[in-house]
Image (cartoon, rainbow, N blue to C red; front, top):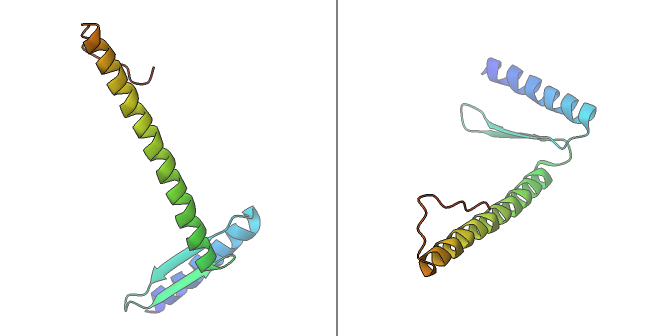
Length: 95
């Protein structure tokens, strides 16, 4: 357990140093071998987690919209090819 305590202290010190030098918001969460939770946040771990989840959700929505656009393009090209009797082996959906 001594090894865990020393390494935890060093990790939190390094996270603090990184946050101070770069101005980044840093959050570190870890669990001891016995399952006890520990955390460090340059501003506040709860705030960092909330921001992370919000940004992650926004990226997910944007990626989902991009995939939907690609699928719609593919189907429009496929339907157009079918209507005109043209068949292509490969359809470029990024055009």
